Length: 328
Ligand SMILES: Nc1ncnc2c1ncn2[C@@H]1O[C@H](COP(=O)(O)OP(=O)(O)OP(=O)(O)O)[C@@H](O)[C@H]1O
Image (tube, helix red, strand yellow):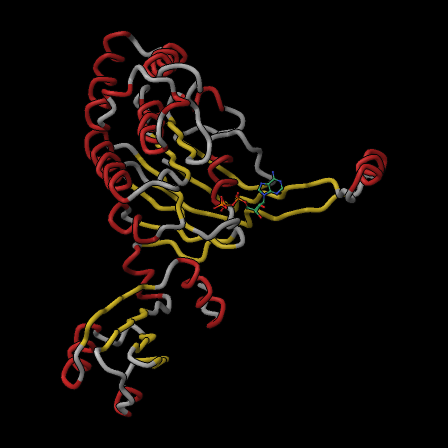
């Protein structure tokens, strides 16, 4: 459904010195800087898959999405989206693709969302019967009935994001591209959006590519993740395998009723680092450590009053990759 081969994007920007003199100078001097944002990326996405495109800030996710929908011209490489070359066939491809950018809106700010939906249906040439059927279902699953007649500018972020999803799906696209769709949303709305994405995928077999740096969120949603950093693919496969492949550490923070200086705490296999600060012990554990057994071991000789278990974030994982130089 989506085939990407050796895709690169180099941004060129005119060098500009600070101040008005700098701005004037730049009008006459053709001096450019180049930024390699996407660096030889190749991947395949099959029909009906939900794939996570993950990476930290500036990794090259949005640049890839923009090239997939044809609003950004690749510097080199090949893209095929449902048989189309996105930049060349942008208008034809628009019928097959729905897009949501978490940071940008495609809704008309001063119009009630129902009017935006109607306008989009007209643009895409959706028949009246089809529109009524699709909108009724989307409105119900997204729970946006109460806000249909409210202008977009008065909606909360969670309400707006659900409206954005509805707008992206009015023409029943085969492919849905979601660029950071849950940024800034609370846990409840994120959960609702998660259920919605799964529902759409199951019911219509929609192929979904979702960019994010929230690994935990994608874990339940995606069959597969593609991890990019500095524009290059570091991993392509199931999240479970990614966690086995990369060094992922867990931080276990245990608060005891009383301070301890028990020497046996320093000899637990798989504990990479330990820090004891009065009655708080922090363990940095490798995959070898069973955290339940670790907690049981501590509780044999101490009274535990609080426990926190935190797994490495995507930023930490990528940091570990570079530290261990185990780039695949
Ligand atoms: N129009 C542009 N001109 C010059 N550089 C750009 C432009 N757009 C993006 N970049 C640079 O290209 C790199 C990749 O940016 P991109 O937006 O694709 O990353 P991202 O993974 O989507 O990041 P984020 O999660 O922060 O949105 C970054 O270093 C960014 O500064």
